[in-house]
Length: 249
Ligand SMILES: [Zn+2]
Ligand SMILES: [Zn+2]
Image (cartoon, rainbow, N blue to C red; front, side, top):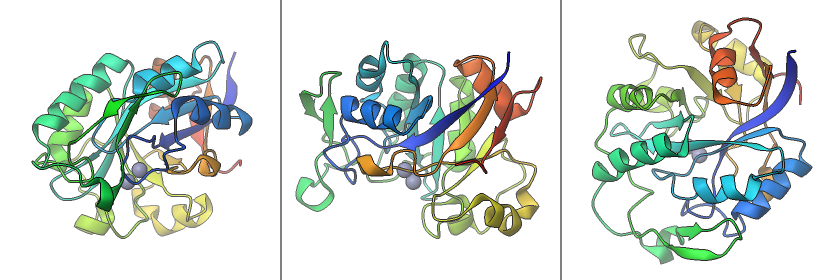
């Protein structure tokens, strides 16, 4: 039977240099459940290293965690890759690491990049320049997300920087993107009006949380049968009664 559940598909952890160090796996899961979310996606900048820990922290709680990554393309466009399995997300991460701007993270300038475990303990630090861009262009990024069986979404298209519209001025029609995301700064009715020419794309609204209190501050309602990735994929495609809505939060 179909049911409608609440999702926030854009959450950073303490691995993202710009996110709060409080964004630990257990705390994220706790806040997500308190906010009444059924689905979250973990989407750190150019890395998926904390996905296993958040999945572990969510085990047995009923919260469904989508392994994800927010890739910064060569055009400085942010693209969300959402995956069925941790393995696929980590394969995508390997590709991203291989194409990342060389250099080390400056912890004083950008912040720490903490790799955590499911008990909120520090396992180590990622020293790469996760805040940088990759040499992958938008087309290749979407292509590779699909090769790893993922769903590709253009992040926060209403933002002036690091969004497809901010960087390129428009959404090229030849990119097989699965959805577009509106940030929490814009309500969904205004977004539909402002981006009416892109009405053919499924639209999600997410918090892009960098702080615990932001989790669930913008969300997407999924009408699906069960909490699994194929149901979510069907909702993006609008198949068999599965659907996405943004106007109930
Ligand atoms: Zn972003
Ligand atoms: Zn983000």
